[in-house]
Structures are given as structure tokens and as C-alpha cells.
Length: 291
Image (cartoon, rainbow, N blue to C red; front, top):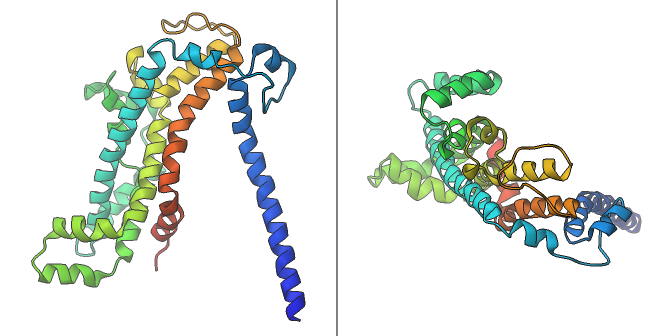
């Protein structure tokens, strides 16, 4: 019996590992294709429909996109919006979630209802644009941050996480004379770092991928983030007419230029994720389960 169970367990592990390996391979192949195509020559891209490893490497695409300060400016805008927006959103989300996690907060259920209501209904694109315009945020980087300051779903995860913390810790701190802010910054936040790191990653990826807000609210090309520049390059590489003062003529290989910009836009997120991965699963699970 023991031998049969061991054999069954081994077969299950082998099958599981095989399936996961296939899924991982399918997932990573598009990234390898993009990276390989960014270093390939135009002739090889035209010859092979799905290129993984180019036979002749060339950095002409990267030399082209870095030949002007356009890509650096777009990256700086995206980094500024991502860092500033993440810090701003986390500050508001933590303060809101902590307040709503307190059972002695007057009107807690009513306030929570209004937050959940925004998850189900919204004013729409045109009212949002009018609000941004009337508040003077139009054509400003703040227009990419202020309208999306708090994601209600992320705030609810933090609120649930805070509620699961032992209440005795706060009682002990209050006996020692600590106020609410001292409890939050000295006890709650240090104990909630897995959840905070996870939600920070959610916000950072959202701000980094800002696209529609930039299309709607920004008319100055000097303030465009990397995603708008990526769209511009993709449109030009596809041979479509597009009025642009930044890229007026994309030389061959145009497909390599498009792939190179995708790589440049993706690498920063890939570099940040490994530092937060250890907190990612733990924070997401603990913040989404009510014990």
C-alpha cells in the first residue's frame, strides 16, 4: 500500500510538473519572441513568422529609439507617475482602510456602502473628463494620478487585512498611551507589509500601464508616458498615417523598433517584481480571507 501511494504521488508530481512546465513555456514564448525580434534583422523577421532566437544579432532598433531623448522623457514621465501615484494611492488607501477597519468608527457601514457603490456604478468617461477639466488638472500629470487615487478593491483587501490583526496589540498600545496614528505607523503598518507590498505592486502596475487617461487628459506630447509612445511606434510600424513630431520616419526594420520599445516598456516592471514576489501571494491571500 505504501509503495502504491508513493508511486501514485510520484506520478501526480510528474504530471503536475509537466503541465505547469507546458503552461510556463506557452506563457514565456511570446516574451522570447519579442526580445528575439528586437535584436533581429529586417530580412530575418520577414523570413520567419515566429522568431525566437535570431541568427544575426543587431542593436540598430535600440540605437534608433535611444538616438533622441524622446524615449528617456517618456520613461521619466512614467517613472514619475508610477512612483508618485503609488505613494499617493497607498497613503490614501492605508488611511482609509485603517479607519474603516475600526469597529468604533461612527457611520462605518454607510461610508463603506458609498465606496462599494462606486465599484458598481460610475459617471462614465465624459463626466470624468469634465471633472478633470473643471478642476484644472487637464494637461497635467496630476490628471493621471488624482482621478484614480484609490482603487476600492485594493482598499477593501487592506481593510480586511487590518481587521484580521490581533486587537490585543492595539489595546496594549493604547494602555501605554499611544494614539491612533502611533498605532497605525508603529504597529499596524509593520505587521501588514506583505499586504502593503502586494497592493503597492497592484498600484504601480496600474500607473505604469496608464494609457486611456493619458489619451484623454494630455495633449502635450512632452508629458506622454511610455505607453502612449509605444502606441505611437506601433501605429507607425504598422504603416498607418499618424501625425507625429517625435517619430516622423521609422527606418527598417520597423518590426524590430516596435519590439524594442515593448521591451523597454516592460523591463522596469520585470525588475521590480522579484523584490516584491515573496510578499505577493501571502499578502493577497491574507488580505482576501476573513478569519
